[in-house]
Image (cartoon, rainbow, N blue to C red; front, side, top):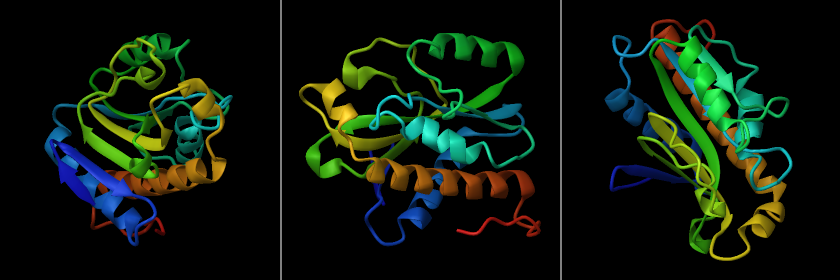
Length: 198
């Protein structure tokens, strides 16, 4: 796990990547989330199932949607993706439905060649669509971004030609990590009855 400038980076190919992701996410939640300040946790998984590189969000949402915790809600799945065309509408719905939501935004992004396969986490919002020159609203109290391919040229084509294997591995790690952290957050350390296997 790498730390720097308010961000935590985990390389999914390294040993104990899941443990590093969990530790990093717990640290970020500890400094950004309180029960008193927020009413619900929203896992906002952004992307489309029509592009291999951009389906990290919907795949993660699909896996997280199988898990039920009190006051934890998932938006953005393979069945109902949250993407450029409906992001603003989804944000309006969240604002209407929840009084003080704490939003964890999850999205794929493009980056340097040596960073492909890394997951970056940090405080504050992410800018969906920035990698493909789209201007969309900033979203999230906390963000998780998976670097799925290289940036710099022909971004749409690069996203279309991203290996599904890498995206699946990232979605597995992110969903398993979030599952564990949400279990700890909602059930507490004293309750071991529904402890997830990691």
